[in-house]
Length: 106
Image (cartoon, rainbow, N blue to C red; front, side):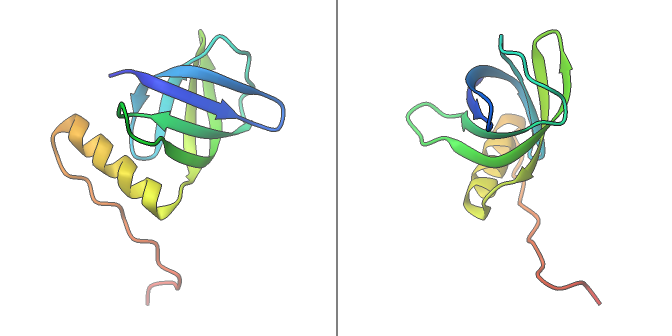
């Protein structure tokens, strides 16, 4: 499974190829130099002919040999549902997003 990833930050804009994806994070290859701890906006072109899944904020957690690992920290509810469906299709199981609660559980 590989697909295009576009990313941007306040300092850079670039593209890469996703090598791994889950509902919480992904890894992608890029020739650009990025820094661990930086925040990126991602566009995941997971399905051909479909709009990208947009991750508003992702934090770079690791960089090894040109592969960047990011953790998703801000994704709209719509894109989160699309990401869950995409990952569920990849593994052959439905994955339902966990609803966000606006108040603490009692």
